[in-house]
Image (cartoon, rainbow, N blue to C red; front, side, top):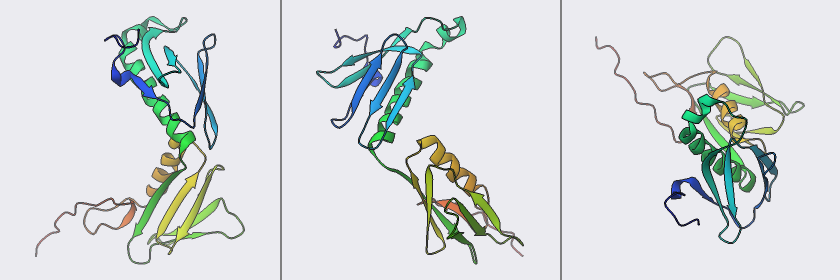
Length: 194
């Protein structure tokens, strides 16, 4: 049944050994129980669980109660569901982290000793920039120029927080100063020649 061409390999997800999966057919919710945490996902298409092969197969059969416009976009919804399932498996299996580097003379990041959820930056402006970190995330400052963001939150919250911190001082294209992701390189433009 699962070896036919109807179920393509790109629509199947392998379940790791240390993860348990519970699927409720009536409410069409799938729950992942991993070593770090438990997460649930509401589905818009039907899925098949194959416990013997430890596989999740996402089909293009829609859940009842969806609109006619979603019927045209079934392939897109199927691909998005596969991506969401893979993301949830990563979130419950591995600790998530993100590294940011402050590049520039005098650019510094400081964490409050009393308030763990707030950090402030010196980024070349005439004032300090204060940033409140979400509850499920932690920020650790290394050498005042490296930020290490980690926590048990979702991958979306982690990357959104990193993007908000980076927006405080985007890298400029002439000298490459600003807040950069780890191992990010800025392609520098040539200045005016005199």
